[in-house]
Length: 290
Image (cartoon, rainbow, N blue to C red; front, top):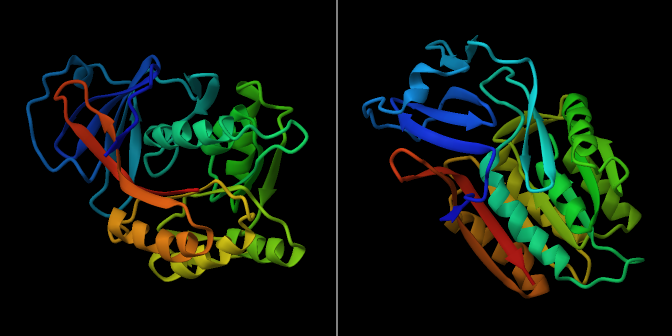
């Protein structure tokens, strides 16, 4: 398992009864987590001193209960700063486990030794609030950031400003990812690294429907057409139960390795839990590297 264990401002303090106790900077949140099927004593004092608690509803969804939590606050990872706010469906605007992937491709970008006039071109698809975008830009890449949600792209821009990357070479696009890639193929544009973090289900800006089990394989095949001849990496993340590391490995080997060489690794990603010492599984990632 690849473990995101370099955080200073974020920590999973404890897990029990379908919930995780987290520290986000100076604030403690309790949020549901389907992986936490055990019910252990609430020993950590944070369970009683939480600032926010997302309660899952038996009818689906849920709602927040707040205890002295600001509307917005920020945390940092290295040189990157992220604005946080609790919003519907339990999220805060950041997936901390992805830091282990940021570190991986940042190392590749930094070690590429490209001339300053020909930096790596990286494409971030389903880019959300820009964690991967900022990590790639901070490492020296030119980044194209694509997400179907105007609000998320706006949030990502604010994260860039907070991280001192407001003037970095980042192209911000509100677009359907599939249609964007199709246009890039027609334009002949190529990228040296591709990151994709597809949702299990989603809608594009014009109502386009995305179901990962039906869409991910043809989309991966499509996306390989905009990899440059000297491409360095391809990252795909999955939070969908059916897309296990072995499936990600096979897809990447079939779509990318057969054409470009290189090698593939895939594994679960996770976060360390302070109280118990366990590693909390948080999905899976597949990595192709030349």
